[in-house]
Length: 322
Ligand SMILES: Cc1cc2nc3c(=O)[nH]c(=O)nc-3n(C[C@H](O)[C@H](O)[C@H](O)COP(=O)(O)O)c2cc1C
Image (cartoon, rainbow, N blue to C red; front, side):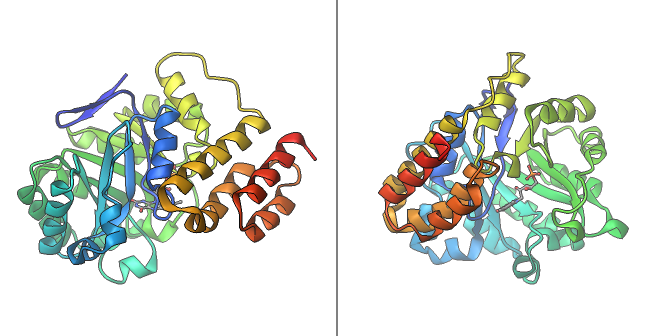
């Protein structure tokens, strides 16, 4: 089954989460090729867009991408967010998401990300300003609240809907929890009951059946997958199959995992050049090789490697079990 945001209809209910430092174009192309229906960019700073930083503008580029990508912005000032949204729209963004969930100190210190859940009047102003500024659908991604004593996602869901947001994503942990404990999927069900706009459920989907369980238990319109797909784009394929009522493909062999890792490497190389790729693929490769015998040693070698040949031969040895 598909789902939609505004007039945009997606081919299935599988959404790739925004992840800073991870979900660049190479990642998004990989996710799409494994059957994910909707991508998110990394979070993009409103200020950096306003300054027109080259690297930031490049984050808006969607060429070569076969499925839509939501552009996620973060910031704390309504007018800056609105102007940044206008730039994103001008550059071709078809949906703009506002980050109200990022828990990192650097972000919340500036009143951005999940700090907005401590200041709902400002959150409202930001949504209002962005919705007013652009024609494309605006969505909001949030957590459950700042901490257990200030759980206010339902209020923010209603504010978002009232201000014209066309979907929300809920990662039901508090800011204080960061990634600890378990995502409280009951909150997704409550959000779904509270608003009529689509709700994307997020948090702790590590295997395809988790996604089905989330949809069955909460009624959410789509599922968003973050950490579970790191080094594991196969999860998109498995989840899409399961949600479409098809058989889950067999788990990938080590060879397939290593081939996919190298494919991801080559794709990034073609987009960012070899130097950045060697540096930025380290974390991805560590995720791809996780759990394979010899992974720890291979990771050290990957971190020393300076050429594609070295990376390829390290992956090859893992694939051959030597
Ligand atoms: C490395 C990393 C970077 C992230 N960056 C962002 C981000 O830029 N914007 C955002 O809204 N959430 C970000 N998140 C949160 C994820 O989008 C998602 O809400 C969270 O990981 C829970 O989903 P999961 O359990 O499937 O990982 C990030 C998470 C991780 C692990």
